[in-house]
Image 1: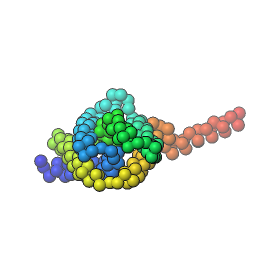
Image 2 (image 1 turned 120 degrees about the vertical axis):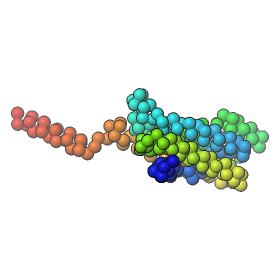
Image 3 (image 1 turned 135 degrees about the horizontal axis):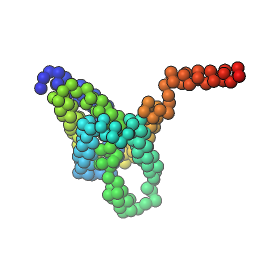
Length: 239
């Protein structure tokens, strides 16, 4: 690799690590797997990271062509991801507050059933928490900056390094999460739902405001429309 390629890969790695918010992903992962065992957490982290890696690598290589082929705009992509995260966040906020009226055996059975029915490894962990609209669009934009085949390949390697770093952090957090008390777990679970809901609204607003959807025209366009309307009214008045 040349020095320019190494510099490109390093900038790519740092940019994607910041965009994907690794500490936030770890915090969300710990709270969403509060009733998982260590093995179950590691499995969820492994599957989630593999899914995220496949998705982001795919969009980094073919994202522009895919969006063009299906006529998908970046704005609608943000809105769809925001709605998905909002539903997850609301489910976490509306979870039962108390289990005092449930026996210990029923509580264990309900938790075991919930773990079997709710597999977070693919969705929402892999997509869209680890790899969401922001990460995908950033990867597409960074990949477009590649000046040659070497830099293009280096960008794909940078994505592997970022996901690998995240997987290491998730494995470490899986072992450390066993020290959390039930009260802390319940609080972090509620806060995570609130944070996810806020993230969802931010993504939806970003998508709606984007130029692709055209719901909010640029100021020059607004001024032009107003001026045309004024001219039409003036002509009607003169007539």
